[in-house]
View: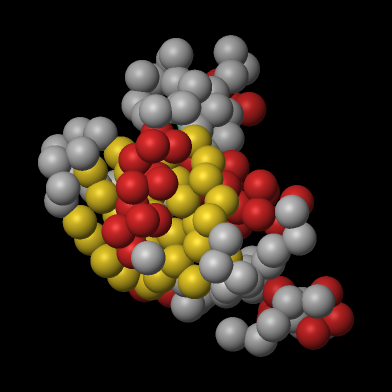
Length: 140
Ligand code: THU
């Protein structure tokens, strides 16, 4: 499954809309259901309106009714794999800090870690009075 997820991220990267940065990113998010949701970065002439590949995959999944995830593969070009940006870390943390991350570049370099490694002291739904239960997310 890990290899299939990496392949899906590499293929999703081909769809990146990155005319400004030319930095293409692909993501593939594995739901607990076993379904894979892919995403790519989608840039905008108003640069700040850009959405990253990780969030694009996550929004796709949530909008299809899936909110529990096992693993996220992120594929980039360049010399080294790259980690999700701060906004994406926070966005993904909403759905659980145990998310396994597989970060790859096109040369086959690979970094494996967990989202919690990249977001110590995360602010999550548990910090709110409502907690995860009442918003329909499982505890992590
Ligand atoms: N980008 C992502 O898609 N994911 C990240 O985690 C980091 C940055 C995109 C946003 C923008 O389109 C390009 O990479 C350069 O920042």
